[in-house]
Image (tube, rainbow, N blue to C red):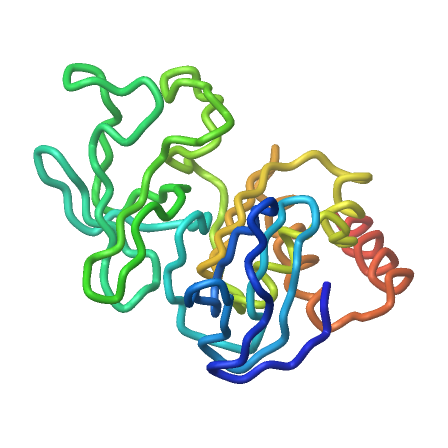
Length: 233
């Protein structure tokens, strides 16, 4: 990560012909320059070759390729409206699932949770999301698709900053929890986290561990907190 404080209009870096860099929240392309559109710290994921601006923003603004958790608010013949916490509801095409056809597609209901990715993000248009992964090609019927309806489990909200922290490769709290208990998790960059484990009580403990970890900076203390909460189950 890069601890560089920038303001709107600041040039963060210059595009290079032989180097591909994906820009995310808080950055815009202006000719050969990548500029900041908000105040915050420049962050970089070397593995994903992605740059973004990290700050204490509360309202989610969609950015292409963001992974998000949405709630179905309307259903129509060929598309759904889905709340992703943005100023406008997003559109999810009914066929935007791996392997979906007109005769064979998911039947989502109002209130269903969906893990998806942003494919269109423009301030003049409704955002669009999709459940088709660019890299993970499991069909929706197998139940192994990366982007899909989230069944059971528990969803809670957190800061956008914390959600992005959980997605980092060196996230200690997730690695720590994984040592003691198996669980599933979906992390939305819109500040929504979905957790599921074999028992409801364990799901609650995992949720509490994640929420508590926001206020603990020491890894040793964080692991002690995890063990104490798990010992009470």
